Image (cartoon, rainbow, N blue to C red; front, side):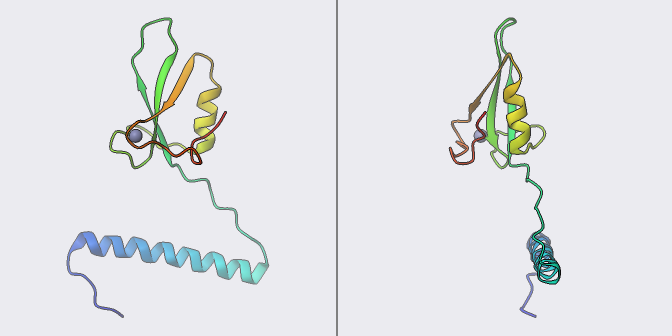
Length: 108
Ligand SMILES: [Zn+2]
């Protein structure tokens, strides 16, 4: 095996990377054995930060990518963000900082 780093942060990062690689190999083995493609769960890649708005005006949420430094609260899947947008009296706009890409941005 290659030489390992000595510090904990890099060791934990390496461990996580190897576990992800192992999971990918396990999926490939399962697919090769069964001929079935496993559906991966939709990853939570967004967060909505709600702003205070005056009573009687639509609730305003700012859509962030999950890794944006301004993102707070629960991480949401694209499906969950779409459900939030369906709710009347809400408005969700993209963050100017992380600018969740148009190809990533959930559409109603
Ligand atoms: Zn953001």
